[in-house]
Length: 480
Image (tube, rainbow, N blue to C red; front, side, top):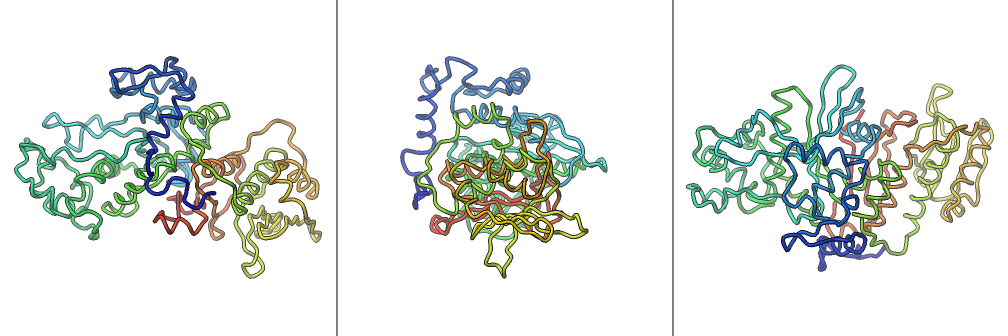
């Protein structure tokens, strides 16, 4: 991978938006509309057929954006990314935020609170509208909800319209640091411009008890953090008024580093744990093959350079596991281990057949692949070389034969392909990504249900320090 992340931070010219537009127009025949919107000639080039129901639902509720048909529309991106998610994908996302989920619901796009409990429309204001709502229910009957703000090429979150409003009689607060200019009582926006009822953001967010943050030299919610603040307030309202455990996630391509920079700034002025990252690549990796390929070709630019050794081994690791899961019936769980006093770096397939955790296969990235069958150990001296050269199936076959496992009788698409896909997609974005699996977590056989509860996705290179990118790209909110 290029040492400068290909594009620097944030993206230097041409911008991510310009790069993506050029990419899209090289693949889709477009026609200009109203001088600035480029729409596809063929609608199926914009929305995948598996996702068409979500588009039709939004249209029926009159919630389509003005430029929803623009090939670079974030609304169309959200429809494609979440409208076609299989149930297993929805479940995997919800489990990563809330733990075990019993039932799930179909995604709702362009969700807003029908009761307007944030009191945003008192003076004909615009109500908070969340791009995607994912809902589920625990076995105990408790409701959970994930509000997802989806960004594609926007350069920032939405800003507060109170700043610069000619009727704002407390304009000085817009320039005063702190939540709502450190004076929520007199904030023009919270007063609804003098309307009969106040907005209730500060009722649901304990803004005056937040730790002080020097990121912004004016009102914290004047610009970048305004839209995330409204989403967090909506989530807090649902939790308080309906008893639904609710959190907010931001979803954008990893390559859009400018947006992720804004995301981290917003996190600093909101309650800890109220705003979470959900890379678009992780959502994409949960799709079926047809939708996955459609979205990869449309939205995910390939800026990868020569692959480095640690990236080769990470990709080979998950290619082997994916092949092993696809070819053989087994009940092993996956854990990261570092035997030999930490000198080995393994992703380990393990079991509890004897009543305690036991290594069965050690995929040692600092050495060889070791297979433990009782008292016998087999080592694959050329396992990594074969996997790196596209022969993961043969490596997985050797592992299965050494363990005397039965091959599957029917075709199977394992959930572990998500891990392999995410590493590949990270490379496309110029990212060196690595799955870290908590050895101390309560680990289970992953089977047909993705277990993200103990996993996090880290940037695996010292170069990220130079560009001030945080090391963790995605971490499961839930810990068992």
